[in-house]
Length: 335
Image (cartoon, rainbow, N blue to C red):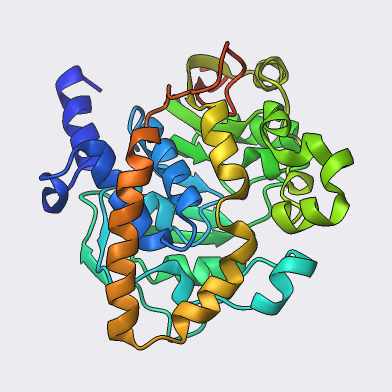
């Protein structure tokens, strides 16, 4: 893609006229806080992730591996929801979140309907995910041309050289990561790119997990809800890059976008009380809920905007980032 075309594509992917009065960072943060307001620490992490993704926006044919409910990619593409919509209105298993580590979002019914103010200028051709309930939610967005239920631990159900843009932000969740990386290379066209955003195991040093001997197992179980245990292949930077090499993938760029400071903020956040907040806010009248949400979002924009930059680190010295975006090219193919 020529430089001019890429610039235009970046603008479409990260900005929308409804938000041009804000800075790019504030615009992204507002979108994510509107959707994830009861978990503001997740909203600002997604803002960082989205900003990094804007450096390599989709080209068709495109696929979003591990798309979930599609909200992240929809907002990153410039989509805007009505302020009355958020992801917490359609959740379940709230009584099992704390002790059984249930995913409250793995729930959908026919009443789920995202209220969209503005659609993205472009869409994604294919979204794939393991959870049918999340795919049902993604379907309501009308953002993916095709949705596929699939476990990425097994071979991807797509022909070789099918896609020009392959995106995944959950590779560290996949046990068979080496075969998954090879599969991503297989389905990517020679003129295409693979964009993966991966956590590093430095995250373990940026959480309270390292103080287990003082805090105790129960405290960390309440705080963490088994997060780290769901990342079977989280690793250091060298290990990730060795994996890419074994899969025949070449690194075109590596962009750290989450620092130690970001990780420390995210470590606790409102995670422990999120189910209680959901119950409480969903019991309010729509008018009261909307009023509180408006003030809440405005407050957290002011609190979090200073941290919504990929190089912010308030700790002394230097250390490994917590998350990196890699743009990769597939193996050279005969013919």
